Image (tube, rainbow, N blue to C red; front, side, top):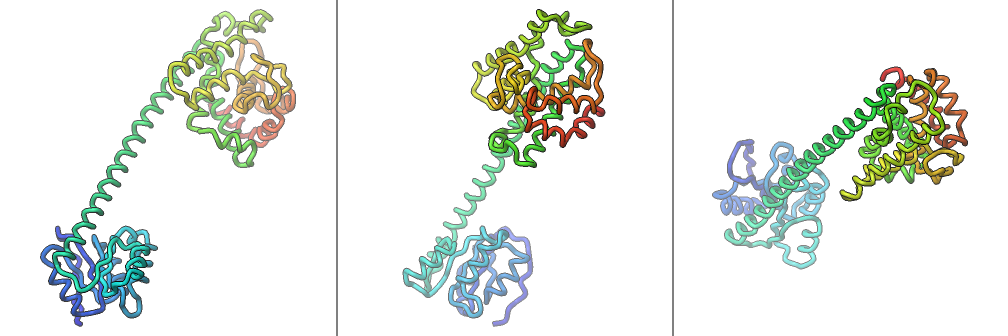
Length: 365
């Protein structure tokens, strides 16, 4: 058979590869289908694969019994290549036994038509499967667009949430004029600690259950209870009395109560759970001498133990009316000296490995 050069052309008709080593079958099939489809008569599987490099058809009509590469081998290769795997294949064959049909379908063919066949019957099979493929593509596109829409809406809500949080955190900092940048820096410190924990596979069972998209923003609310503390105490230019310090400590329970009120009026959410645990436990101490609950060791939630290091470090290197500013080196030493008393010893060891990065954050922000 003389093989004519198949030009790549634009056509509204759907493209179908007809693959058969028998010249008569190619000619007959082409005559049956050419008025409705753009038919590419192809005498071997090898030539089909060469043509697939340039043209992706809507369907392949594939003979089974062919020399060099039979139909079963051809469909295996088609299904193994991502760019061709979705092309529907109908076997056209003289094999009429049940085993051959099951074999063809199990390899991924969408249909199995035995020769000889009539034009109306073959066209009906083709139309049915082209319609199914079109519906599958439309459903896939719909799902893709739906996912994109959900992603956009989720991102909008997430951005709105962060904007509200930042505003609330800024209000707290605005009232305490000595703590500018504290909220932002502590988030950065937390991220450094968490990244190192994950890198070294420490506390990974617990951390793997967290969604970092919610954990880090939730840290912004760790001091939200300070909004209810008097300016006279927040900005007192000297050491607090015992009575004043007891009032200051109330910011923990006030913050937890505020977050619980939000939880009560909305569905359970990881963001609020993290925020409540951080706000309620970042002043606890490893040896049980902290507040507000006097928790000891690993009874303190990991979120609170992490925030304790970030919060104390930033307080040390920041201006406060009741103390001098410590250098980053001094702050690092104080954290390390609190190993096993104030802080989780495992977390202090991790902190020591990233202390230089803490110092970089302190210098930049």
